[in-house]
Structures are given as structure tokens and as C-alpha cells.
Length: 88
Image 1 (tube, rainbow, N blue to C red):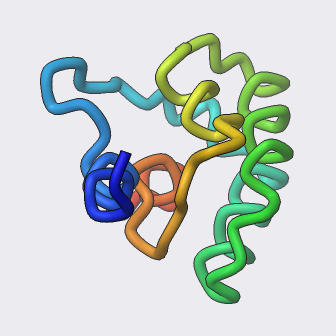
Image 2: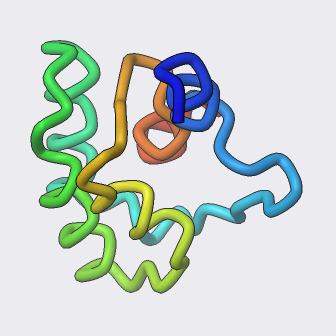
């Protein structure tokens, strides 16, 4: 997979499988992790964000898999981080 394709997937996700993000998943922990990654542009805590979202009741495979993908490229504008922060 080229870097450009990975970046597009990180920003837009899968347009054929839109995710409904539950407000109950926006816990203080999830918000803090997402905001920290957004501000620092260091997305190394994505797997921890997946754990926080799962602890909050998130069972959406697309969200959790995106956060835990070891080959994933994440940038400011990542669709999951933006959902957590309410930016999209």
C-alpha cells in the first residue's frame, strides 16, 4: 500500500461503511488521549485510545481495528481522532 493511499484511509476511513459514533464513547480518557495526539502530532497512543474506547463501550470493529493497526499511518485529521474530538 502506498503512503498516499494510507493517508487517504486515515483521513476518510471507508466511505462505504460510515461509522455512527456514540457520544458515550467520549470519556475523559478518550478525549485526553485524542487531544494529546492531535496537539503533539504523535499518534503512538492509538492502541491505547482503542482500549479506552472499548472500555467506554465501543464495539465498532472499524474504529477499534483502525486504532490498533500496526501498519497504520496516522496524521492530524485521522477520522477516529476527529470523531472522538467531535471534529467531524
